[in-house]
Amino acid sequence: MEKVKEILAAALTLFVEYGFHGAPTTKIAKLAGVANGTLFHYFATKEDLIISLYIDVKTRLALYLEQRQITGDTLKTQIKSRFVHVMYWSLENDTEFKFIQQFHTSPFLARFSAEEMHKQLKPDLDLIEAGIAAKIIKSLPIDLILTLLLNHIYGINLYMINAQLSEADRDKLIEDSFEMLWGMIT
Image: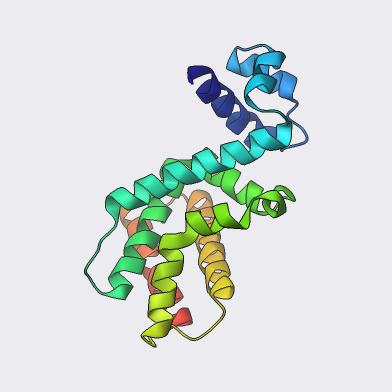
């Protein structure tokens, strides 16, 4: 499994730096310190590697959020907790976050199974559905609300990276941006 981790780490670095098409498997294998054949032993195609890397990154993000999830509090507090922790994770894991964005805007997203996508989004879907059912969140299509959430996160992340804010200003921006988002969906 150590070789798989090395391949995934190399793929992450090269995909973010050069894009999916600009990072040949030979470069990935070389950076991982394995033969090209070894890479294909673990991943039948480059597409399999890309999708496996996406699942790996999203699984690590989900575990991070699960370890920090607030339960038994108000719906707003629960959603805010997820939002805030995603924002901090995105700053601490810049390369992984860029990869997620890259994947979401690529044709590979369409090849990702709906079942796997639902599994990854289940905690968010459950909170949104509960909010709609309780008439706290506007009765809009859940896909639209998720799109609003994701694009808000992407935009705030990009702003924070470019603005080079102090820690206090960054924390305030995260708080304020959640309130803007909350106002939009409620």
